[in-house]
Length: 492
Image 1 (cartoon, helix red, strand yellow):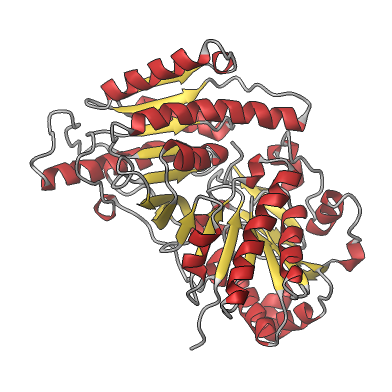
Image 2 (tube, rainbow, N blue to C red; image 1 turned 120 degrees about the horizontal axis):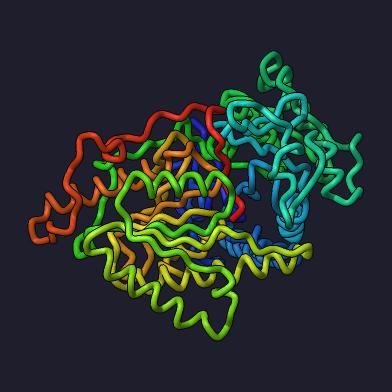
């Protein structure tokens, strides 16, 4: 059996590992840490660049500098180069053309010509799929072309086209010609199989874009097998994709669903955990309301205008953290930014506001983390990255699995401060899951913390919530099937 390909995945926010497990996640732009993983054949390394939260020029620089350093070291050690993946949003937001182009430039600096870019934005579990070159998002049970959804009206990455070839032309500013873009159709995949798909890929030369149609994992598996055929022929491709295509590229056949017994809460931690909510999308608001209705919580709402006031902000943030720490002895806590979205018509200014608000939320989590909460959940893409890296100090982690099939990952920190190690960390995108999903995840985490306390009598018991057989949060979350929820990875 051939060794699975080695993957280096540049992930523009922390949500791309939703469909995989037992892979390494690096949260710092550190070539040395990445090399520790990709030196080993068949390994997959996600690097969380958070570049979706950066202007395009900065995003390109982050990708270029890291990949160039990694490729240079591998070449000097006479080791094979990994397949490069630019992982992004399944509803098409992000630096779609610029980032994979930066990866191709880095390869060509090493003398490796890139034949093409595979564009496969599907996230099957979330009802994000491509058929007839049109990309769809299932919302409230109904498939909609993504150009007709609210995702396409994103303040920073808005677009109008649902046909992926037209979309690429649009996002390239017209530098790509529609007729030059290849397409792997469902009939090619299902009737022709690997040989037909491989024949299409052989037509790619000089950085040809190739749209990948897929409505299920079997389609993506076939494309990944055809890519292996081309790689064996010495051809080189760069992938731009949503979460789902990473799974077959990495040689994985399924996801791992987590229950309370699968989650380890280390010793010396408080009885309860913290939910930090930065996402402002409608589904997040409904999930937050359901969590508040179903569970007893200590609640802190951070007023966004106050957070943007340089004079009031420091004391306001410190007070919030202190109150949360006191509360975690007796209940879970949730901190969220006020739901009124502050934005402008200037994309750069909108990003700056979002980052300032995210920074304040991260400051609160950082202070609370020193007290060792049982677990932490971060809601939102930018929020999840910043909470993990700067709030909790996580430098490297392992993806343990997900709470729903292919959705909502849990990181187990492997390189982090003592205050963070032993505390499960949940990456919960803004637009993922049904309305009860956040409450269900918190219920599973609470049950895991209770199990840990029952196994270690030295831990405190009085603060824990009594077991309630009628509490659905103390069981596995309900099964969510592809296309049956409003899910998406997120733009905080």
